[in-house]
Length: 632
Image 1 (cartoon, rainbow, N blue to C red):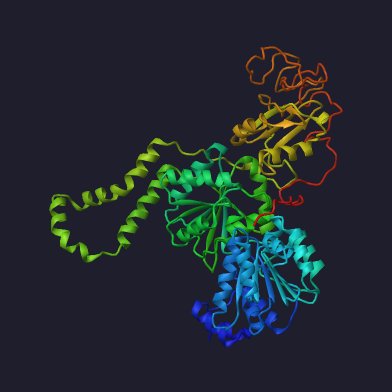
Image 2 (cartoon, one colour):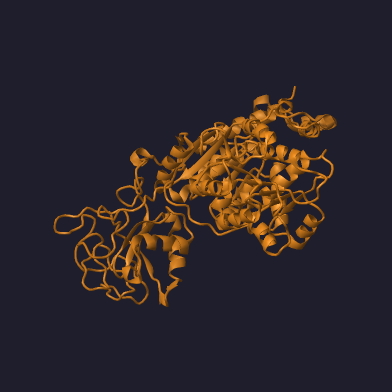
């Protein structure tokens, strides 16, 4: 007996379920469906991505819709175009035996007039992205004043993408007496605020612990130098020959660049990001679902529409800014009861994030090392042998065997195997013979769970230190300067650190991988009409000081600047406000640079200093979520 029959679903829905091949309901379906069918109620359902939430609200919604009434009765909000289309297709599949039920998808990037026309013809269920839905309401193209049901799917992700105001406006336009069903993987403050404002005594169901990761996903991280990040990605792909993965990057630019590099290096890869047209995105996803693509390199926003049960690995090429986003990423694998692996490639400056994620998902990461060339060759060799063994013989070749035997005559079985394997295997041997193995870093004592800066080494740990000619006289303290640099450079919240603000200048650090970007971008930026000048400082800013203010890491006094000489600057100490004095030098006038951390000045205190003012923790999981640009 199909267990869906015990949930109270109609015969037409059970017939559709049978066609879809569903046998047993997932936990969230088993908990939600009977409650939603029993009565009209508000509900908050917390469950990870990939646990069957669409069916959990889709089945009871279809059963409650009046097919004879052509007016809009239900609105489903989802964060992205891909997910909007995915939900629409699934609702259509579920309702295939329900005559008269129409479902319309409303999303950006398509004709708004055609979508309005489809709704006017009669759409009992609208599936929409918040931005496009708000646009249609503003234009008077849709009426949701009489809806009976409103479903917020992936609510945390919608709010994380900056849709809070749109969602509030849409819910305010809908009737108070409707039933609201909120489905989310996590429950951040913004989601709780929506529930409190627009829901009345909602029932709550939770699958697993709140905000926790899926039990079918294992988590592992690889600690490497920043310069080895891409090489590490390639080696991990080679060490997993059957990999079918989503590789996550933070920006569209990085996504495209990594995908292009992988393709150039012979990997089956493609990029998925917001700059692609809808037709291009559909083509990429079709190829990925058909397994013509093994490595799909994607941004977080674009990946929201990926619904493929057989993904073996999620690779975090770059960690996201928000822990909740990591949860969504890892939820791409380990679906439909299958096991999956979430891989994180990190540098030492990012180790603190690993500990923060562990606390939230309530699972431990396993620290692993990048396999050596010899190990990869062995893995690939055995994989090839198994592939040959499991290959089904097409007897169409029987007619050609005599000629083939003549060509291979005189070769022993051992020689024949060696030659056959070498045809496929030689490229791995050749590549790994001439390429060095990656130096695996050790986390050691770096993995600590304390406040901001806990995972930073006592010195720069390979980071690049910069001098920049803006400071407190430009109305910056270390926090506002850090925010300004992150926004200007389009970097993550932990990519800029050790920010120290003086009166007419400042110092800050990034990982070496960002050096070119910092120099290129900042040296072409103007602040209130004055050109920003940034140079690399040779002092790490981390030396100890004696009682005379001398730094153990550098000299004392006003000698030659350690910053790189620019054309025409001369070789002596420069005192103009755009020049870079030696970090650690004696302060000679208001525009020259004192030794960082030497004599205490009245400038705002530096990030991580022992005398800083109390503030909200900036640890990876504690800070308020930054408002993201709204995207459809």
